[in-house]
Length: 406
Image 1 (cartoon, rainbow, N blue to C red):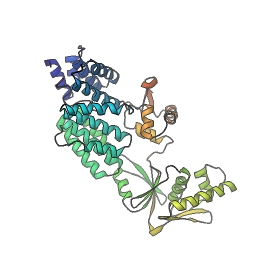
Image 2 (cartoon, rainbow, N blue to C red):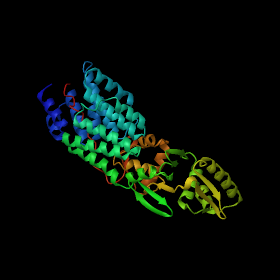
Image 3 (cartoon, helix red, strand yellow):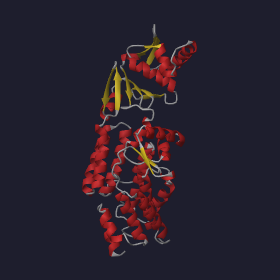
Image 4 (cartoon, rainbow, N blue to C red):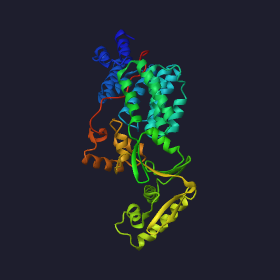
């Protein structure tokens, strides 16, 4: 390797993308193209970065399998940053296998971090945890340690395990400072902000207040009966009854939970569950059927008693009933929640993360655009969506020791 390639690689490893470009910006050989692609990605020019990395992967010869694998790993991270969650995971896995076979354990570990982050974004927490568990974290350099701990923290936050989440974020912060890369430190700081932002609204006995994640965890562990409108489930003592696929039953139990210990009129329940303006005989008959089904679902925890004007929940064992709801409720709240990470998402990636159809997501994005809640750029398959204002590039697109042995 010539001295300019070595110097550019060292500059990238320290986060100096401009310094790297000064050394290889005008060269078209494969190592220079790869380093240029990584540098452009650090600077936020994802289109040119993707083009350079693809050219580099094609330019490396058959005896340069490791260099080509590193380019594929860089492409995979670029896809992650671009929220192209449908990028072929098989290609990343094959690149990781090649790196491991040739003794490049650091870049192989980097590949696992990328796959774990992708799995975290689509909600596959067990798979993400399994991928992380396949690498011993002790010999990892600070950059990889910080990236790994961010995934560990994300998994813990999704599971509302706040003590492990805080510990992971603290380890990520220490590693980021040791690495000395400002973008990585900023990403860790941004991830930590979620702990100080409202995560849910608590409705109990006619009053509402906002909760932080720590308070949400405390509520779920307190032994109260929780009607969770964030996930459309009912929780008690670690047992969950999901009503996500039964929206009428959940609408009923939420209305009854918000009114507890009072009751809810039949007219109000019809309006809430069936969106009917007037409760006629057919609505009343259907309400009785749905209330009967709700009694079956909640039979271990609560009774649904008829009152003179409607129905009321009566928890067994004298437990309290509370309702957890998102801090801000919107028809398209789930889409907004994903876009709130500040990254630019494709509609297909949003559909994959939400487990719904691309057309459903597209309709939601069109409505949110009309309401000026999201904005888009690009055309066709390159179109991306984000919440305004456009944030800076937050992800450390740096391979550890990029192409240092190419």
